[in-house]
Image (tube, rainbow, N blue to C red; front, side, top):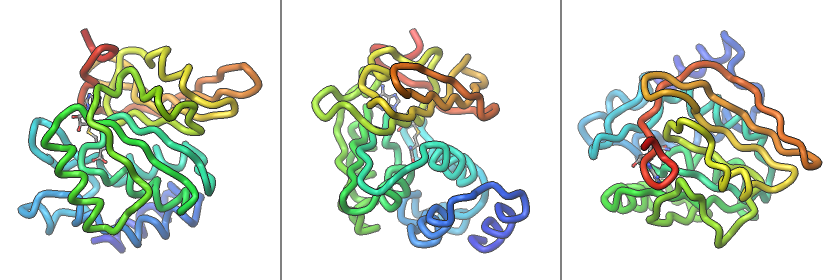
Length: 210
Ligand code: SAH
């Protein structure tokens, strides 16, 4: 299953960064899903992780990760830890000198992700239980920011917490479908690129859907 997904990505030329392929091979998605779904670990679809939440489909994780243009030593903020899988893939690409701060609003998922990251022996991820729609001021600015829950508008406070230069990626739009926006901050300017349509679970909290 893992191999057929890799073959498919090669065929459609989805991933250009070879290090991302290596990270996908190394990190076991099985470690981040519910026991009952282990056989479906490498199907290209999201899976339930309880509490009404999902682990994103592998292709989506790849597209979002690649769009961040991750470098060794990057400091990254994730909003929506969920299973911890996306954070683990990022952690692998930024190496030991890099750090992922990831925020999660559901208590039980904080515990779930902690356990999963431990199984996968990932050490450079810190999970913070909080409403991440307002970011995480304590460790700002971040070289990269990723939202893995849909928002109606990218919260200004998150753009403020992005380094210059920096990249933020987020699914933006109405609840039923969003555009994946890659926001690039450079020399005081902001550019937005649309990477296509996706469907995510909604962002909760202060700057989530009202
Ligand atoms: N990145 C995850 C998938 C995320 S699903 C993975 O790799 O598995 C979206 C997650 O965002 C859910 O776990 C949800 O509880 C969380 N979430 C929603 N609103 C949030 C908020 N305001 N702050 C932090 N987490 C939030």
